[in-house]
Image 1 (spheres, rainbow, N blue to C red):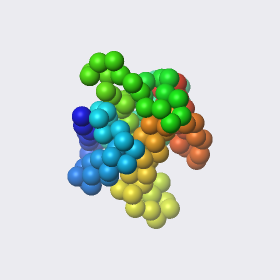
Image 2 (cartoon, rainbow, N blue to C red):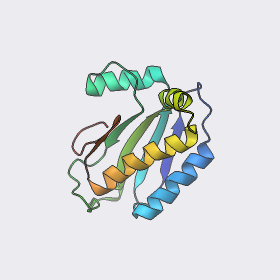
Image 3 (cartoon, one colour):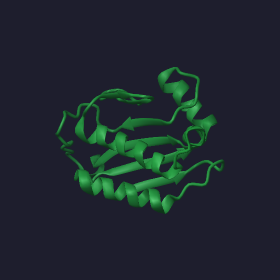
Image 4 (cartoon, rainbow, N blue to C red):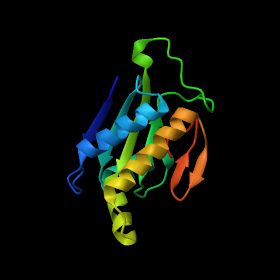
Length: 144
């Protein structure tokens, strides 16, 4: 199975090859390479729209996640009944928002994007809940 990586914005140059490599490495480490995963890079306007629709927060954010499975328990991977259920879901990365944060804190954009993705996927794969500075991994909810 694979990763669908789409860049739907033109504000921030995204190194898709590097991000894909990092994603594939993480999927291998977590043992979830048989599952599909969507990663969509969007600008502030689009992430704000999605955030408003699903979280009722009319502000841009760094990452929004939409898990395919809602009932994953910590340490347990999903047990799909059909091949088309080998899907973890989609992660929307607010790359413009992340870039602005990185500029304020003098951080590497691509490292930050990889870190956001890693937290999102790790939360899905382990079923854990985490709340930290803007990242909210919540099993059973549509977003972080």
